[in-house]
Image (cartoon, rainbow, N blue to C red; front, side):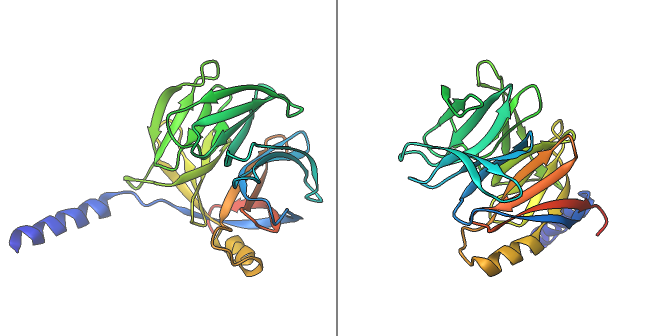
Length: 253
């Protein structure tokens, strides 16, 4: 009993010694319509338009979307055997992951296929830092891919207060940090790309509750981050959400 007691004290001391991670809030700047049938897996903003990757077998696609109306302007469907996942736009090429096929697609700016690539894990989220593609696979690891070979050059374990953060999903690179949805939560992890430490949590539970009031489907979770780097605008949405939100981060809510 004494040994167990002192072991418990040691664990408690270790937990208390870990630095706490700040939790940020948000303010809604604008609200836009979003296709409530879109199972959002990836989201980016470029040149005035949103580009969205959607999932589910037989419904997966790459889309160009008008921001103000949510109208789909262009779409390319994936073959029925693929479950679409994260997307990014890098050096004028769209990259799109698939979930369990260990295969990704490359398109030109008009959604014409120009290549494929493979990976050894599941595919979840995708972004880039201007030099390398960054991929998540649902674990606590991020993979930094060489843009020529599309092979991992580096892996990074993401931790919050010393503990690995599992289920990293949709990714976006914003002002030198990796933003990651954590699947089945209403939080986004703000990650230091060198250390892997979560520097802050962005709590979007208010938006999730609003979306759940419209669609109680348990799969309708937060998943979608896009950044307008020119105007410093942040957009978020979720799977099967009827809304897309432009938000402003409040670091001391």
